Image 1 (cartoon, rainbow, N blue to C red):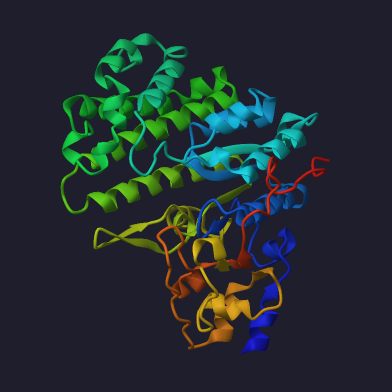
Image 2 (image 1 turned 180 degrees about the horizontal axis):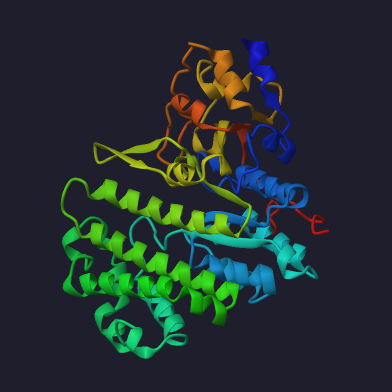
Amino acid sequence: MATDIKDSAHPFDSSSVMGLLRARPRLLALGEPTHREDTLLGLRNELFRQLVEREGYRTIALETDCLRGLVVDDHVTSGAGTLDEVMEHGFSHEWGADAANRELVRWMRAYNEGRPADRRVRFAGFDGPLEIAAAESPRRALTALHGYLAERVEADLLPCAPDTLDELLGGDERWTDPAVMREPARSVGRSEPAVRLRLIADDLAALLDEQRPHLVGVSSAEEWDRARLYARTAHGLLRYHHWMADTSPVRPARLVAARDRMMSLNLLALAERGPTFVFAHNGHLQREKSSMRMGGRRLEWWSAGAQVSAELGEEYAFVATALGTIGHQGVDAPPPDTVEGLLSALPEERCVVDARRLADALGDTRPAARVSPWFGYAPFDPDHLADCDALVFVRNVTRGQARPEGGTDLSGLAR
């Protein structure tokens, strides 16, 4: 079996990844088992560069706020703002502080210099405007959508005036109160103003669709895409706040499902634009049902990847990442009977594994499930091996591999 496992491994590069796929996907998703590790972010940067230069991919989509991501996209495509400003305001989850993310943005901007618009690389966030403890106010999405329509359609078609939106929204602190996560009764998500806002959001989105023949003629492609993004985000945020106010046992599962639904809709919209490289946690991108334990309860929901796969079929590809050790996080050498342990016997420090061939090599032997020493790391689930189009294995994740200022070294790649 060891020989069969070795034969399933290939060098880590875009050619190996693409060679294992049944078709060239519109969405090529690379998962990670934990966030904010320089080694994994460096692999992401390297693979994206190769996909751009060799395979014609033009967009990278990260698990970060879709509205903040517009700041990054404006910078890499047109030079708007300084790099420091973009890293401060263009990412959620504090990921703007990560050196490898900074280097990614720097490289994308350099790559686009002097290139025509149709050959420039693009950046997108596909997460909702959410953090672990709170969700953003729907103000930005609703007012931007209303403003876009108000400039382009007759006033009597709009469901309300701008001041009505302001009155119903109230202060943003009512929406973003972090105490709501533990005290649902404090949420405004099921208040009368919130219910009215959901109806208004629905009417605005319907008007956007009804007026599409007119709107696409009086808007740039960019303006139209952003209007659709605002509509999706307004709907998604109001739905999320609705479940924030729920007091039943299903509340946690409904919240994570609402988040992944926002992700899936954003990814499907990006797929319409062209081949896109997606990077997020394995759990958001897998085709199988996602699960986690919270407060002693097992939560289950369909991931964004599962929803996108149901829509796109073979035009969606999922490449999971498994890793051997993260010494600084207490993730020691994996037991030999786990997937990570079996792959650790390979000589390569990193490789792309043919997941189907590995599954065949294992036959009826089911690898053991690895136990995580901390909440932020999710070991590879052996039951999901057949769920992957390919598997990236990284032997060791270590600190200090990125340059202090620039992250993973992508210098000289903007040719």
